[in-house]
Image 1 (cartoon, one colour):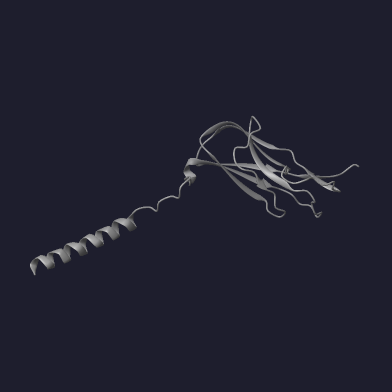
Image 2: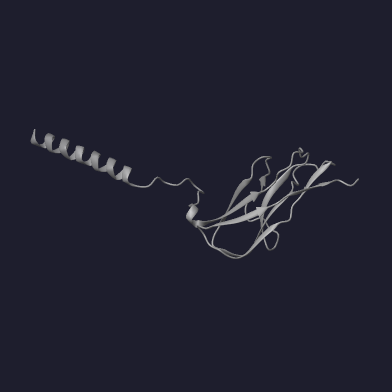
Amino acid sequence: MKTTKLFSVLSLVLVISIASFASAGTPAKKSGEVSLSRVINHHVNINLTIDKRLCNFYQVEILNEKGELVAPPKPYIAGQSKYDFYERGPASGIRVAALVLSPAYSHFSCDTELFTKPAALKGNFEAGQTYRYDLYPQTQQNKE
């Protein structure tokens, strides 16, 4: 009888300690998930105010000095002005934000097209930091 009570108490203590140990730990990360403190955040603002509808598809990109993407491009969505890109850090060099015609879709001859001067930053890009780029697309009438 004493042995049964002893095992019952030990089992209860064991269950409580396992439960408290499991709840005290941080949740495990999914495979491939990266902590935001270990990445560089490139924040792109698109400052566009036009009344005309665009007939082409555009995408927002972050490139390095070699013209290579440092993060996957994102499709431009009319009315959305903020885009975030993440790159493993730290890094150094030049980073360029651009709004360009999307190569994935055929391009139409439109009355109104966007032309955007890229925004560039040069230096050391630290992990855990956010770097801001402002793009100001201009509309230009097609001269055909």
